[in-house]
Every structure is written in structure tokens, then in C-alpha cells.
Amino acid sequence: MPRMLEVSDEVRAEIGDEEAERLLGGNNAPDVYDCTSCRTPGNSDHMPTSTVLFVGEETAVLAFAHASCIPSQVVPVSEEQLQGAVASIQAGNGPGSVEAEIPLQAELGVTSGLVLIGGEVHPALVVEPLTPIARPGTTGPVDVFLDLLTEQGFQPVTDVEQVPAPLPGWSVLLAMGRLHAVLQPPTAGSAPQAWWQAHQAMQVADEWRAAVNKTGRVVVFAAPVGSIGAQPREDLLREALDRAAAAGRLVGATMPLAGT
Image 1: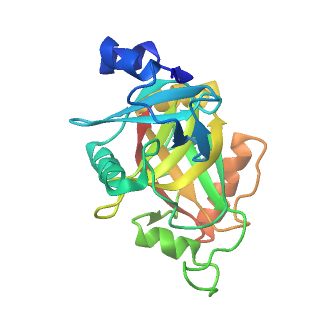
Image 2: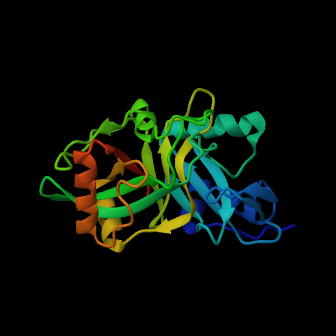
């Protein structure tokens, strides 16, 4: 039975016409799947479904998503991330997802903006929990959000005029102009992990997308709950970052862009 699949021209170019027609005809495509964007169940028999091809240096993984979440496309990712996804699928975790559960179970607010650092404009994400964060498996003490991040390799930011150091293995997943996740390196034998995953792909400003496509990297700042807040303008966001840095309540890292 034909599936309600969408195969974009760029995906077709990667997998070939023969494989694309097999997918569209109902072969080699699951009827049920976990959406690779929002991670809720989907059914290609009853709802429009996108084919999303994650491509590494040597490996490619075909995943599936609700067409309302993400269009059919090719998403470049690191080979390390794809190897973890392949291991997860072979272990029986099922097709349609290349990400594991978020290890830090917390609701994180994420804001995108352009931040002036050292006289240059940088695309940035600012991460702030909505509640105090306890260490996983415990009820306290709180708030250990910055401690958890420094253990992961984030560096304290005492001066926003300095670009934070790169954080190896981490990346920001942007697809078709929408922000999907901040990815961290997979642990041994696991699938790639989303440290933060958007409930629904987040639209970013055209200026931010143009800046990140130019630099290929994103500056990620993080602060405990109540440190930054919702700022209506980017100059006010910068002022809030400066205050958090001066108070010793800001960490940061620079991450490459995964996707387009």
C-alpha cells in the first residue's frame, strides 16, 4: 500500500530514483514511526510524512517526520552522531529517530539573538531553565545548573567581550531555517543525544539565520533560572548577559552548525 510520504528532490538525489520509488510505493518505509523532530508517534498510512536523510562523512541514516514538523530534506551531521544512531536502530530502538532521551529532564527556555562580542556580531543562543535544577536522581541541592554544564565542558564567562571556547562534539541542529536541537556527543553505544530538543521546530530571524550560515557556528550561553529573563531587544539581552557574567552566573561555549 502506498505511504503518504514526501521525498524531496535533494533526498531523491542522495538515495536514487529506484529507492525513492520503493519508499513511495510502500516498501522500505515504516507505517508507524517516531517523528525525528517532535519525537511523537506518526503513521505514514494516515498522515503526510517527510523523509529526512541524515548524512555523515561515511554513513547515511533515513529517518521520518511529520510533514507538519519538518519538510523532506538532507541534514549533514557528524559521523560520530550517525554511528550512534545506527547502533540504536540495530539495538531495536526503531527507525525514525536519531536522538536519545534528554539526560537532563528539565524545561529549558531558549532564546536566539545576535550578540556583539569584540566588535563583531555573533549568532547566539541563550539557555535558561524555567525552574531551579537539581542533579539528576536527587531532589537537591538546587540550583546546580552551572555545575552540570561545567562538568560537560562549558566554560565560565566573566566577560561577554570574549568568544567562548569551542565545545568538542556538541552542535546546534538547524534545518530549513528552523532550530531543532542542541546536540551533545553520544555516550558509548548510545544514539546521539539532544541536550535540548525543541517541542516544535523554532523559527529564527532571517538575520540570525544569515549570520549562522555565514559563520557556521553558534555561541551558546547558559545561566540559572532568573538570571536573564525574556528580553524584548537584543541590546537588553546583551545587558542581561553582562550582568549575569559579572555575577558569576554565566557559562558559554561555541558550537558548529549541524544542518542548514
